[in-house]
Length: 382
Image (cartoon, rainbow, N blue to C red; front, side, top):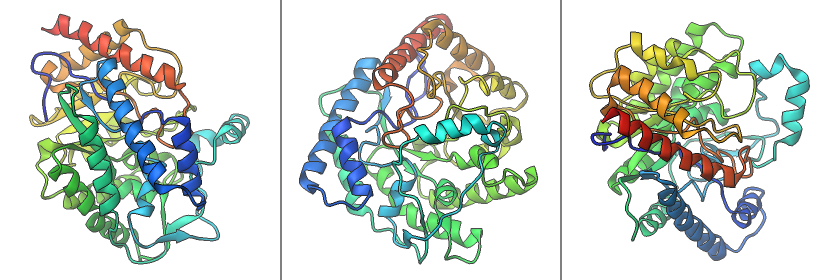
């Protein structure tokens, strides 16, 4: 993975706004309606091509496919793994911070689109059957990269832990067995992305956000043990991939809300740093977590690690001023070294299809501000 050796490089978390026509087809496919599969495949190809060019035009150095083919960054795996199916009722998890403000919670739930089918769980043995779909994603990104200049390209994949967070286990005897089966199956996807020549980004929001949901009423140590098991499973799944070809993303939930019950970064950073990927992507722009850059003044970042702190809040339509982005980047660079900082975003701008909290045009303007802020910071740091 390239480092910021001459200037601060820019990237983002993964999901980007999907075209409306493509979203319609994704919703139809998700609900089981018959769709024109060749037309769907063509729309995905066109969307990947367009989003790569938009990233380059915005000034993003390390680009991806925007997750155009996926209904969401996590639950897409139910179509690539055996063992998942409809159940009468899936678990309903509390969101601890929202429960303190029920009026606001109702408003948010009423506005949220039903982009992901409810009631999907693991009900049988897990194996990987998504090779064809994955290879199509790989081919689409390779084709889109033709004729454009980028530093590198990455592809995202759901971690075993985040899959277990969203898709309940109703088959395996315990979490350890479930997470092990997920790791063994998803290894095929991780290996294929690496073998295709892309950076692999492992999405691990479970390492922070599950404290606010699955473990909302449990002791912190119970959550830490669970998160540690998830990191162990992840490391096992990526054992054949060099650490410097991977990055990991964690977050506290990509939604506009109070977030006053989020687990502090300093309570989980040791677990996150035990994960094999060299780069750590995390929220650092929103009002609940921006102050946590100081964690790295007391926690020594291992020499082989790189930070991708979020410079843009992915839940607000404010466009960050480039000067603010530059100030944020400079803080991190002064603590861990300029070559070990890359400019990122707090989370994706469309983690679930149809859930565009940030207007698509504003999302692209925010990415332009990210690139301009990185240029300002680079002028100062070099």
